[in-house]
Length: 160
Image (tube, rainbow, N blue to C red):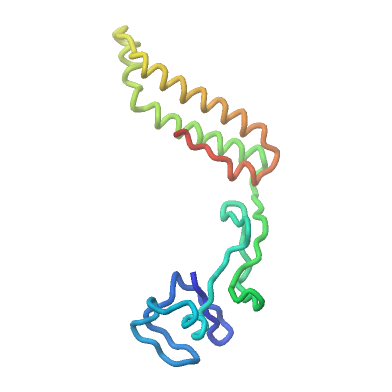
């Protein structure tokens, strides 16, 4: 990302626009092919996110220029959540179980067929379903052991 200060307002762009005006004049159709030095001459500098920034648990301040490093950046601050720790855990566990349910759906018919007709469930299906349920139990215990809201928010419930 690049940013430029235009009359006291900092504009952030995904890259250098193809057409723009700067103190050096108007550039038409060539911004994206500029070298870094040319971009800086026109006032475009890199945007650097603060070290350790994670959008799930941090907010960003207004963007500002760091003269000594010649880039734009933000100050990060910790987010706050209105939910209690227990509520965040319950929501995370609910999402975990929903993911597990979706993974189990593709083989549920084996279980239904077993219940209705007594047809055996293939051992690889039994093993895969057991692994999903064990993984959910492990993750649920880990979530319940967390003591900080931010750690609950960033906890990975991926079952793959």
